[in-house]
Structure formats: C-alpha cells, structure tokens
Length: 585
Image 1 (tube, rainbow, N blue to C red):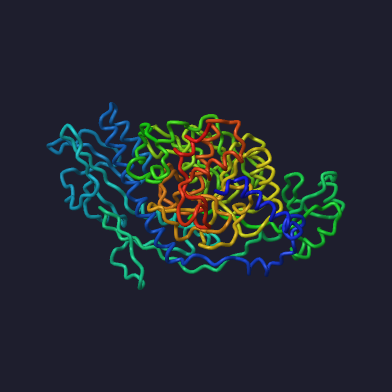
Image 2 (cartoon, helix red, strand yellow):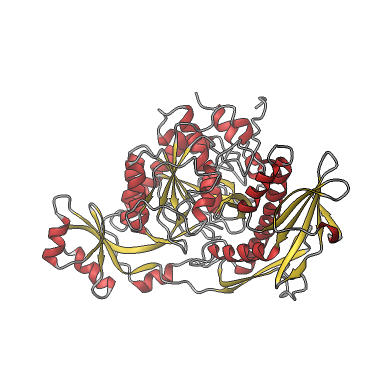
C-alpha cells in the first residue's frame, strides 16, 4: 500500500517540478480563463431527488424528536414544566396533552386542545399514529398519537406549515455556485402528492403523512468565481504594509500580515500585472470565491442519544462504537472552518472554545447559514446526553471559524485567514468542508503553515462528479475525503481523482442545525467531518503523533473499496475507526 508519506513525496515532487507555473508566482489568469475552467455540474435532477430524500428524512427526524422526548418526560416529575419546554424547543408544536384511558386530560401545554373531538388516526408508522392532515386558518395541521405505559396516551398537534416552510427555506442552503447539494437555482419544494412530475422523475414519500416530496430547481449558470474589485498581495517581510500602500496609492481592505486584500482601481487582471512588477510584492492574485461542500471483540460503547440508533447509520458503518473503547477525543480541539457554528444549540453550546470571524476580523462566529453547524455536529456533538445525535469525537472541543457568509460563500483570503487563526489558537485538527477549483498562493501558504505546525488538515473532495482538482483538497498536506452511501458505493455526486485519500458516509447524514433543530444533509461536506473526528480520536490517544503519523493511520487502516489497494474513486477505502485506533502503539 502506498503510505501517506510516500504519496505526499510524489505529490510534492510534482509540485516542485511545476513550481514555475503554480507556486511563486501564479500565472496570469484572466477572468475569461477562470470562467472556462469551471467544471460541469452534476445533473441537477439527481441532486433535486437527493434533496427531496433529505427533506423527507428530516421531517421524520423532527417528528421523532418531538414524540421521543415527550415520551421520556412522561416518566418524570414536573410533567407540565417539561411539556412547556417542548413547546419552546419545537416551534412546530401547537399543543400537547397526556390523556388517561377515559380520554381525560392529565397534563397539557400550548393551546387548549379539544379532546372531545379528536380526529380519526388513520395511519400508523414507527409506533406513531397520524390523523389526516387538515386545514385551519390557512395552515395545515396533523394530530399525532402515541400509546404510553400505565394506560396513558400522548397526543400532539403539529403545524405542518411550519415544517414545510422551514425545510423549504433550508433546502436553499445548497444553492450556491452550483456546487452544493442542489445544482440548480430558484428551487421549489412541492409537498403535494398529486403533482404531475416530469418524465423520469420520482417523488419521495414521507411515511405517516403521505406527503410525496419533489424538489425542482432551474439549471443555474455558474456565477463569477472571483471576488469583484479585490486582489491579494503578499509583501516582502521587510516592507511595512501601510507605508507601502500609502506610497503607491493602494487601498487596503483587509490585512493578515504579510497578506493584504487591495481594492482594485480598475481591471483586476491589469492591476495584478502592475503589482507583480513591484519588487516588494512576492505574489499577487485574484481573491477567489469559496463555497461549502454540502452535498474487535470488545463490547460496543453505545451512547443514549435519541437519534443514535434509529438514524445514525453512518457511525455504525465506520465501526465507531467499537472504536470508542480506545478513545473519546478528550483534550483535543477541532477547528470547523465554515459558516460558523450556532452557539445556542444544546448539542454544541458546551463544546465550543473561543472562535473567530475571518470575514470581518471579529469574534462573532454565529452561523447564519446552517452548514457549519451541521458539520460541527457530525465531528463532535455532545454525546451520551439523551437528546439529539452522537458526534464522532464526543469529548473534543469545537473551535468555530466563520469564513463563509449567509449564502455559504467566502473568499480564499478569508479561508486562509481562518486557518492562521486556528493554528495560532491551538487547533489540533482543521476541517474544511469547502473549496474551489483554482489554486491560490495565499491559501497554499496557510495550508503549508498549518501542516508545518503539526495540525492535521481534512477537506471535502467536492460534489460535482468530476476529476477536476478542488482546493484545498488537492494540496498534498490535506487528507481529502470523498463520499459513500449506506451500501458503501461511491455517491453519484462525489468528486474523484488521484488526490482523493479516503471515503466516509456522506448521504442523508443527520446532524445539528439552526434554531435547535436536527436535519439530514448530503454531500462530501458531511463525509469530511467523520474523518476530522477520527483524527481527533487518534490525537487524544497519543498527542505525540505527527500529522503525517495520523494521516498514515487513517489511510493504512481504511477498508478497501473498488479495485486495487488504491483507486481514484475511493482512495484507500472507507475509514474504519476501530481498526485505526486499535493499531496505535
């Protein structure tokens, strides 16, 4: 097997051979060249179908969360207080009641429920009984009932309009540059089972509700991959930036010494050529746009989180329960370089260390997109706390680094700035579920700096079903992760190529989300944090291991998939947590 160090040596040798073309300085890349180099997107019909599956599963996840937590509280004291908590935590619940065998209300919360005229519960799915949906004041509702012990019945009235609106809105987090979970623009989500679908398209059914969900998006042309009116320069260390800018009449927009983002006075290409002729400038380049990439014999350590057994198939597939016998990730920090993290989410709030906003150079890392919160939960959500999900490295701390905005978009400068901050503030592992198809000197310098400081870097391969190299994933210092499904087959959207190192589950992955919710998402964005969590587990067992050691352990103990010991679709195979951790001396 080609070990990680050997692969890096080959890759680095290739980099050295072509360094006149790639590393210092970058070649002139005009806007027209950049536009032509963009890879084709995956057929948006396939992504729409995958998104519909995620929405259907997320619907069941929300209903399961509501009923499972209520059932748990019915065995405890202060039931009325707990019911009110559930109303506050689940905004789609209008009313709740616990009834005795005569149908009398024992406890209730929310709006008053008329239990004398409950609807017929016509459908049963997964121990829950559902009424037919009904309309009231232009909103759709459904009654859900569950039989409890001690001759009690729990009934809840759920606002289906809220669920539909919430999930429809957040389907759009995938719509950015045609490279996330949906390749199209102006997406619509149809919950009507009577909808006439295009030829060859199928709707996804939500059991119990009899919804048939169909996502339809328009083909979207690729937008500009360059941040308009901005260029990046790296100055000679002997040069004082402000004095240099004043002397040459440059306008500094952002600074991360020795890197500057300058405002372009005219054409970016001409301005870059002018800067490259300056002896004080080591390199000058476009500020590229970035987007997230969200499309043993021992006993198992089984956490009690409510979604672990019924929904987190992904953790069982990578042999995580057995692996937890060896490590839980304590005393390790995972930096999530993404859209930020929701600091109020109950499965994350006690896991966070100081964070950073690399967009505006502030401490406000709050996630207003959702992608980063989802990624963080996969890597290290609070675990064994009854509610929510289990994270891969459950005792690791999360360092939230916001480099992407509300639309899931950022720049090569903000990503690089975030990497530097993470290194300087003690990150052991960095996860980057984002990328772009253009080499950037400022990004490469940041990656190289992090690697030289001993940090393990993980990145998603991309979601366009192409062998075009994605950065930072293609840099040899980075462990690159592609996606597989529940059958251990390559996800249809997953990028491939010689830069792919390993795979991890990346379809229909449940995790934390905005507004204290949990939803399913798909993409190599979801695959990468599985590997970041594994890297943190390794580090927690033996902090003296180098990042090269950690990379070799992950690749060397993966379960081979596809042809040969290594192939461009699966790398060295799917990660195996138990085999990896048990191999550590």
